[in-house]
Length: 193
Image 1 (cartoon, one colour):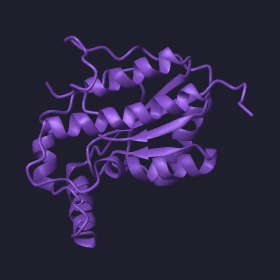
Image 2 (tube, helix red, strand yellow):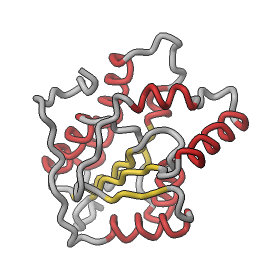
Image 3 (cartoon, one colour):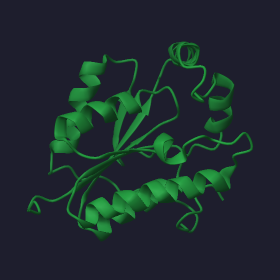
């Protein structure tokens, strides 16, 4: 039976090591909403993976999210969401009359962030976890989130506190956000060019 409640599309955005996956896990568990991860869509990443590879995988992720919204099912998407892919997600939500709840995760203290990334790599050396150097390279392509376009969560704060912020943000149906806008024409499936 289809729910009469308005569906919600939640995207967790941020560079690797900023805590987005932890929060996405907790939120999906709390609400029992499908969780789509770019890592699961991408599978084994080839050594020579370029922007075309990632554009294709992001498009697959967003297409799956859209199918859930068509069914009236809320969904959570966990990816870096570098820039124009955020606009695509926003358009999908609007097209299906869903609430759009973007959550941007970051770490305000560079030393803490680097330490977390290094620790995660040491604990998971065989699963393609990004190195600090790779993240810094990726960072130069990451578009700045504009004020009032989503919830900004600083991972230096306690995880319990950040989860409560995310839960409140996603659950509050009265929140009005500024639209995510970009300076160039958005092309579906071409997020890095």
